[in-house]
Length: 324
Ligand code: 13P
Ligand code: SF4
Image (cartoon, rainbow, N blue to C red; front, side, top):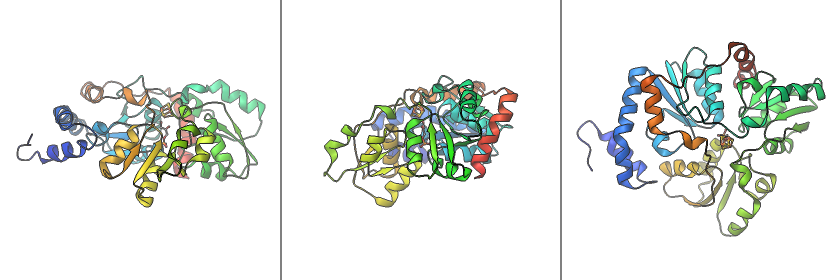
């Protein structure tokens, strides 16, 4: 199918998407992608997407795609009227807390996260009673109510630096126990974990890696993976760090122990890489669709609204993180 004059972006986008889906499927989505692009312009909106979103979203409509840390920095700096978050609830709440004057839309309001659901604000208060005076670091994969109780936030990209910055002999790190052990191996202080985990990365085991030993396949794992997976991997890092690693090391064959869309998004830029399976799907990330983005933008629905008293306290640990 050919694009008419002035619409060369359609041919270019269809060609990129054609690397990860049949051509006909890519072309079938272009009218909806065009509608969303027009709605974005009409509403002064930007779309920020996580690396686990599908290429129809990252390549089709996103103004910015990145890891949780880069998404937070983008939200803190944009001057757009509206920020549409193609990701899960904690990401949209983070955007709203860092950019309170903007309208933040979460097109899939049901998009949660097993880590964010694993701990409550009351749990953090109990930890503080049990460990008086010990600073609390919260992964951004938490609710605003939990953030309101902690000292500083972190992502998987800066967790080690955030913990080191506290200069404390003991630190409470929540809620991901595997990210906590990743940090504990890289800092001098004691790290007190919370027993949460990501339902996507918890499903990987070192046995997934054994068949690739000695085959030349490079194995990359997210720090939300269990410790045996991290120990057996060639590289452990955030989704953005994985992309940087692939850019620098340029391996031909890769096993990415993380969410499946990561490989598809890398393939848009690096079609030469051969990705091995397994990968796992995040059911929360996959609730975001082009239709939902169009509806949210067109109707101004799904705006994030955080109780002002919670927001005021939850903003501080996030700001402390982005200012580090
Ligand atoms: P990042 O490495 O992109 O921050 O991923 C965190 C995550 O859990 C997304 O769901
Ligand atoms: Fe949460 Fe895991 Fe899904 Fe990320 S991949 S949103 S941590 S459940």
